[in-house]
Structure formats: structure tokens, C-alpha cells
Length: 346
Image (tube, rainbow, N blue to C red; front, side, top):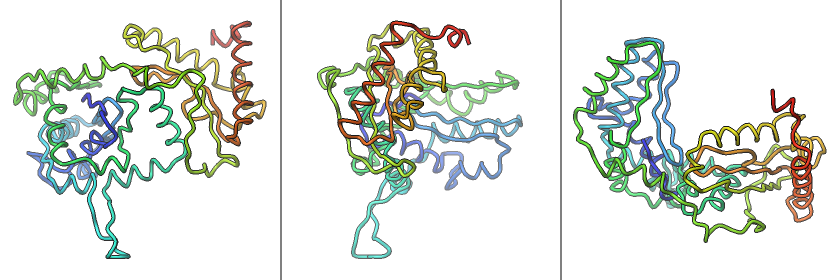
């Protein structure tokens, strides 16, 4: 399903959890985890990204495939979405068991994201996306930012499901050697036959495909954005730096798979392995012990970016300048002399 994150309340993420808390034909407390115990599956999961949510599964058994398909179809299209499930999976207030006079906010996703956003690398990457891609769904934290998760209501969750979890906004994929006709019949019987076309659901894709970076909010090329975060436990020095930019916001480029392929190949040539020039300039030269989050070509969104950075540095102006100088000198040399043709061919 296309589920663009319009804010950082974690709405698509919390909905992903809540639809798996019982459905019309499977009104048990947790059909998803019940199936993990009874199924022969080789893979089961549910995943939320900045612009879509997916529910993948795999199995080598034909009957198990049909069973899983039925559970998944009923879960996503006809979930119960009970308020109590929202409070459990999303957020709620409880008394502190160790100090009853104290009120705490808790919840499965709320606590999960508190842990996730406690990582310096995650904080750094999220800020990088926010600064580079203002005005788009990619600037928001799709999993949810705890202070904003607390703003989400059950009513809004139900309304979001009604519009976004509709066949007019869905893509269904099957793969393998089982007969496709049977799959299509099951999908129609268990889901599609109970819906009419929805223009509102169909047009959700426009919120993604028509998104544009708000250039007025984006800092200039030489602007430095600083963000504070916790130390990285595995590094002696805790500073990070990344020089990054959006490659293009033109629709033609964003949809050009050839350009994306070239971006991925160029990223590999520049960064991957001891013989890569930027690896030599930063890591081999001991300017930094490792690349920073956000390094490399990122074509996972509609706004491809390319970044080069380092972590494990002091983080002051002098150390940043050393990293920046090493990067730019290496890039200038590549621009003049090109890349090793043997690596390109390989």
C-alpha cells in the first residue's frame, strides 16, 4: 500500500501493527504470531517505509501459502482496529509500577521508536533527510517520533486505513511455481469482490509522485547543519560529518531507472572496497575509521541523493575541515584522471 508519512506521528507504522491484532474472519488476539507457530513459512513480516507499507510472506507448501494469503488479506483489508489495540500498539498513559504516583507514556511502537531513535546513527540520518528533503514525506520519521506519536488518535488511524488500505491503492505481487489463476481467484474471493473503485484511494499515489523538495526551506550548498546526539559506543570519537546533496528533483530523472543504475554503479566505484578512491582518501589514510550514515547513492526515495561522510572523528571545525579537504581533493583528482577502467569493467 502507498502510505506516505505526512508527519512524524508514526501513523503508517502503528497501523501496520494494529491491523495484525485480529480481523473479521480471524478475530483472535494475534493471528499473525499464531501463524508463525502453526505455519511452514520461510518468511513472514510487515514493514513500513516512508512512502509504503508491505506485508510479505513466503512458504514452500501450497496449502500453507493459501492459508497465509487468507490471513494476510483479511488482516489488511478487514481488520478490527479496536481502540484497545491502538492503545497497546500505539501509545497510552499508565502508572509507573515502581512509583504509582508517576504517570508514564508507553506503547509497543512508542517504546520501539524510543529505542531506535536513541542511536546516534539514526538521529544523524533522520536529520540529514529532514534537511535535504523538506516538504516531502521523506523529511518525516515514518516509524514515528515519540513526542509526535503522542499526538496520534484512534479516529485518525481508522480514517487513514479507510483511504489507504483499499485495492485502488494496493499492489499485489506473487512469485513462484504455483498456479497464478488460483491466487487471483483467492484474492478476488477474500478481498477484491467486496470493494468498489475509490478515486480518493487511487489518487494517493499523487501525494508521492507529485511531491517536490521545498527549495525555500533547504539550506544552501555551503550551509552546515549541526545536530547533537548520544555517543556511539563502538567508537573512540563520536563526531560524524556528511557532505550530501539531492541529485535531481525533476520528474523525468526521478523515474529514470537508467540514471538510478548509473548512480548505484558510480557509488560502488567510488566507495566500496580498499581500492575505491574515496575509501583510500578517508579510511586507508586514517582520516576516519568509517564512513558516516548517509554515505553513497540512495535511490530508495523519489528524490535520489548522494552523500560522502565520515564518523569516528572529533566533530569540531578542524576535524570536519580535514575530512572535507580529503574528500574534495580526491573528487577533483577523479574528475581529472577518471576511474580505473579495470574496476569499471569489473
